[in-house]
Image (cartoon, rainbow, N blue to C red; front, side, top):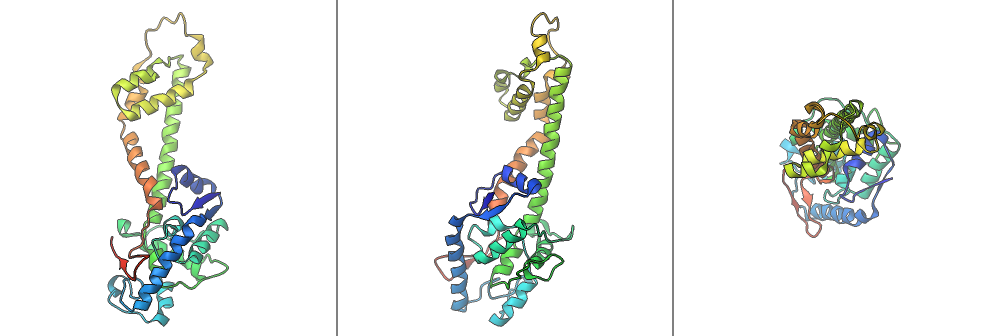
Length: 294
């Protein structure tokens, strides 16, 4: 069971969600923030002041005020997002009920169908998330057995975000990590098969170089070769001075690869993005105002 709404989703959790689909639940600690944010939306509506996405249209319709009775129709055109964690942070003005419905879709494995193309990248996965929302509203190919009517601000909160792009990036990252791990394992097997030495992977050598990636890779080679019977068989009376360059310098060549550097950048970005609130405007819990940004 993985809890959402804590703002602390780790890559191992995301990898498990992508590959094993463990059960998810909402952390009870996030409910007060959700209710405060929802109350802020209600105060904005009562104030009568126009607020983007709450009582106005979206995009080019942002100058159009919408009567309360028409809000539901507007929301039906909007979307469901893969953003339970983001919404659960309590900065989007949605009801706990909405997040519970999203959790039910996931836990029942009712995965909405969306087109492979249509995102506008950093500006948002608008079209893909619009298709995802249909499951919540009961009008898509995949439907929640208990459709809901979206409240003010919820349509825009579901629409804003890049969760589809982030999911695709994570799948690519996890696949690349598997390939990289296989390459290191193959390298260690090659050393063992050639009756090579594990001395070139000694941490003290790589600490002198000062390259974190090189040090980390060398540590993995040592771990894979630890306890090798082949290595033990030639610890003494081996006439060779050193192994071929292609074996002994694997940590150096791997560290120099763009893949290692890209992993660190991608991992850093992927660790932050899933828990980041992406709704705009963000209701202020203590006032009748909302703040709009990118």
